[in-house]
Length: 228
Image (cartoon, rainbow, N blue to C red; front, side, top):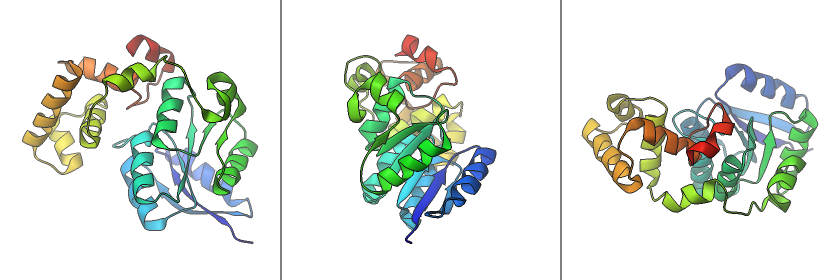
C-alpha cells in the first residue's frame, strides 16, 4: 500500500511529538518531517515535497497563511491542511485565500484529522462541519465581516508582511534584521512603508492591525472583532 507522506508544522514540541506518534499508528501515513516554525515549514516542504503539509496557523517567524502561500507557489502539488485551535472567520478566510485544501480544529477528534488528511491527499477539500455551517458551504466563506475590511486595507508586500509579523511578535528592529538576514536600515525602511501604507504610526497599533488582519494569531480570538 502506498502511504501518504506528511510534513508536520507545529511550534509546540509536545503537540508535534504527539501528532507524529499518533499518525504513525495509521498504516497508510508516513510522517517524513517536522517543522517548528513557518520558515522551516517552507524550506522542508520544498525539500521533501510531502503529499500533505499539516500546519498550525500560529507559527513563529512566518505565520501559517504566509507559509502556505509560499509553499504552494513553489510546490503546488502539496496539499496544505490547517490544524488550528481557532476557527474564527478572520483565520479561516485567510487560510482559504492562501489556497489551503482543508481546515481542522484542534478541538476535533483524531478521526476527523485522519479523514481530512486522506481527503485532501485524494485531491478534494475538507473543512470540518462546524466551519462549513458557520461560514458557508464547502469552505466558501462569504460575507463582508472581519477580514474583508482588513484585506481591503492590506497592500503590503510579502516582505512587509513578514516584517509586520515580527514587529507584532515583539521583535525590535535589530532582532527583526537578524531573523531576516537584512540590514537594520532596511528593516527601518520597511517599517516606515508599512506605517505609511496602513496609516498607523505606533507599534501597539501595528500589533492590533496584525491581529485583526490575521497576520498573527491572538491568544483570545474574541478580541479580533474589536481590532479589525
